[in-house]
Length: 340
Picture 1: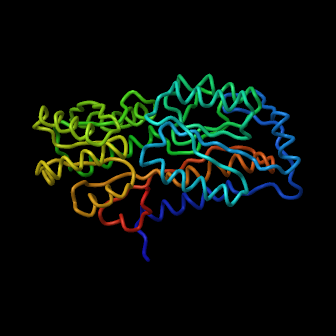
Picture 2: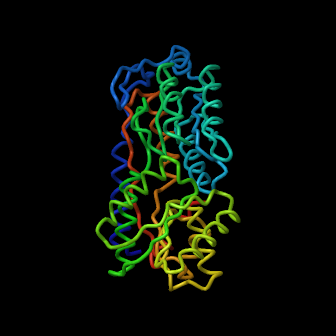
Picture 3: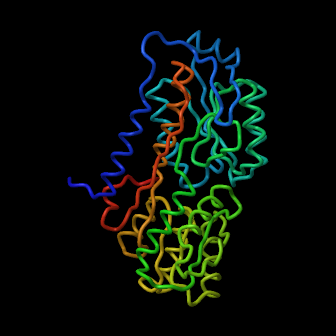
């Protein structure tokens, strides 16, 4: 099959990730020390060293900020693939509804009870999770972030999309779709106060600077589908002259697309957003939305397990993995795996 330029770029990026897959040769020895991104030495906990030396099953947890989200499904699938390939026990945990306090409490229990050998965290709130990331690091538990970055914490690496850059990419694509038109652009997010949402929005704002567009939002829709739809419906009723509806995530995107379809605004109001959920695929094929940006969630789950497993088993240094930006249009959607 002949691949589009964007698809070829994505393939090259994927091959680039393979360069990070080279593990140490020779005998398998447990990791001992490393450095966090923000400096400082790391010493592996004695109980983890002992588990590695004895060949005991290694337990890796991926704490996702809200496992009830549809986006968690492909992350879990990638995690399970990584667990099977690298011979570890990997499990997704996290608070339903994205409550930071619940996520912190769950992680503190695991750390204090020494129930985990490696940890990957997608923060519900960067500020709330920063102390517990430090707690895990200081306790000698290898810890990375995935999906949502927490660069000011003691994380040892990050697996996922550069969210600010992805926001800039979304802005660039929107400008291409609008072809010089100016006017109001409504921006929606399932959690406008979350760090990931702020990062994407800041990148988007940067990307549309001096374009003549008037940004409304970000409007907080919440994650519940009917409530998200109602919020978008009421917002768009108050912004009747809007020329575009932009989403910073998968779920406000599908809610917005549903509103476009049911309100008869398909073709009148442009729509761009994120992720390749099954509903999004249908809306793309039907021409309801213009395009979406994939952040390779299955790869995020896989790479998170891989980095931790190879660090523990082989002493392979932890390095960040950028899962990149892939623009998906109605013409290319059949070439892209569905994320959910």
